[in-house]
Image (cartoon, rainbow, N blue to C red; front, side):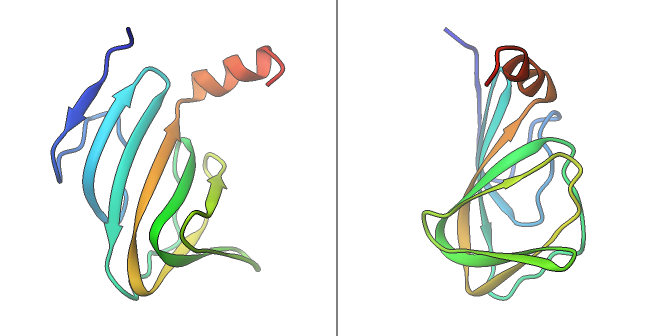
Length: 117
């Protein structure tokens, strides 16, 4: 069985990236960090990038991500992929929101490429 670490609200493991919102829960398993975060209404992040690739699923609320001239709006049940080191900013809409984030370790991505995934 894979080991995992469950953390309480607001506590981040040293290997987890920091997100601009409030961390509600986090769990580490080999190759992945799973997090639930909440963002206040109309919150806007500065341009930034994440070291790890990640998927972000809107659970409640909505946001618009900006990648240079491109934008993508995510509503509940939308899933957005962020490549590692991809510069972007995020605007959380009037309702703010709650999001499920899956960070993917680089070694896992390399292993998936080796196996043709």
